[in-house]
Image (cartoon, rainbow, N blue to C red; front, side, top):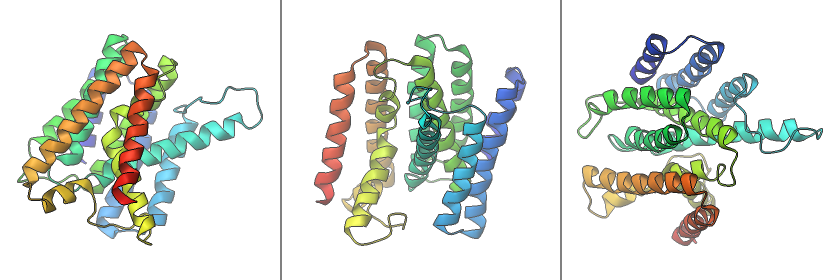
Length: 276
């Protein structure tokens, strides 16, 4: 909750209070509440998913929506709304999934935000740059106390909020840039949580378990089992996140579609190879 409060207070102090900012405060706050409820009540996965979907739907209804299918066809709005909700809920839970070691989820979110900020500043997206800076500041203030051994923990409320804001950043970027690579850039930047989520679901499916059931097969746990300390394991994953962020920025600046597709194909192949 501390990250959310710092984010919102900083926005209210330093930015104009527009209707878009008001809506951002409301629907990101709802996602935070979903996480807090899960922290307190440990609600069932299906109910949690339903509440997350409602929060994402509210964001879509307020205008935060991918426009991957051109308007004009009767089914285009339905497809765009569906893809937008799936993306928001997916990235939100992807960041939540990597929240397994001290400082991991917050650090990955901070690194991803740095990559988005670099792109926003290069293309002179002033409002997005300001939002990204505020978001990074809120995360950094928390991370100081969340590194191993952690004194504070974000819980599901914090990790869901971080993932939700990152998903919104990526949607706004895609709609603003509209280049050949705009859809793929956020996937590369957020490769770590996306890969972790995809490989976890595949692993659970192949093991005959529920794809939303918790297990100890995550990358950070596998590193710990191989003898790495928590700090070393987090550092390794940070390095991967930094590399992904740098590649994402490079692809965005140079419009390197082949490189983006190559990276995504490699990640899929690695994920499949690990469990098949």
